[in-house]
Structures are given as structure tokens and as C-alpha cells.
Image 1: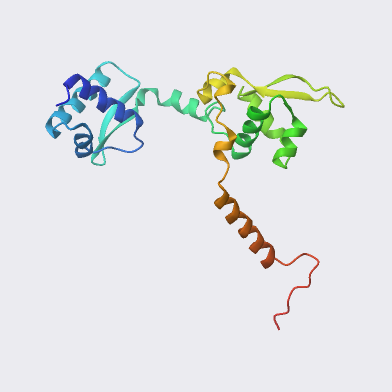
Image 2 (image 1 turned 30 degrees about the vertical axis):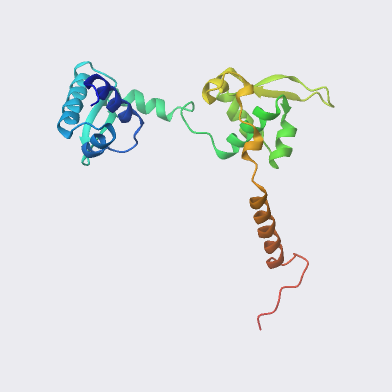
Length: 203
């Protein structure tokens, strides 16, 4: 039988990771504690959060329980969420960030060449978020600026150093997948008329 102190800690951990209300039955199942005991713990946590004026409250909604931000802090929370620091990066920015992380120091033209599109906007976004910074200039013609990741990038990625980046080989498709991609591309080439080829008549 799980100790009451441990049960309280376990339930609180679950409440922090869920993205939808969790039922009393489910909490009882995963913890091995009776529903009555779990209900007492939930009531205790709810009172604790409210009496201590915590930044979050425990509510019973939709036949379950979930943590919600304290309404008293709504205006500040809304302002934070709408700030640029909290907005999610676009797919383009994420791709650019990955290239810089693995290829650094790297120039803007090299990044654009790898992505196949102009990366200027994405680089500007990443610099604004302080995930990327200028690290010097290349010795190539024109001495273009070199870019690299920042300490904030390491913190955001949960890395101690860049050596902690996952090996790109781990993401490479296996031979079977590669063959399926080749076949798919071959079939696509056969079905799409070449721009200079006459389109078959439907008459």
C-alpha cells in the first residue's frame, strides 16, 4: 500500500503532466489507492493550493481533475503567452535552427542552400529569441557573417553541451524505407507529364 505522503506526491506529479482532466477512477488505478483515499488527497491538495495563494488551482471538471492557473493572475499570464518569447517557432525556423546547431559556424548562404529557400527571416527570428548569435566572419569571399547557437539554445534543448545533440544517423531511414521512397518517386515521375510533353487528348 502506497504511503499517504508518497501518494500525494504521485498524484500531484500526474496533475502537472496531464493536458485534460483525469478521473478519480484512473488515479485510483494507476496509484493502487482506493477512490476514497484519492478523493481525500485531491481535496487536501485543492485546499492547500487555495489557502497558500498558489499560482494554480485544482478544479473538478468534466468528471475529472485538472490544474488551472489562478484567475487572479490572468492578465499577466495572457500578456506572457502573447509575447514573442512564448510563441512557438515555425517549421521554417525549426529547420533553420537544426541546420545551425549541427553545421555551426555556418553562413546565411550556406543555410539557405541547405534549406533551398532564403533563410534570412528565420535567422532574424532565432536571433530575436536569442537562440542564435553571430560568432564571427568567414574567410570566404565577402567575409559573410557566421552563425552559431547560444547558451539559451542549450538550456531550451536541455543540453549541457553541443556534444549532447542526437546523432543524425539515428534519424536516417532504414534501407526498406529508402526503397519505398525511391519507388514512390519513380511512380510519381511516371504519372506526371513532363512540361514539354503533349497532354493526352480526352476527346
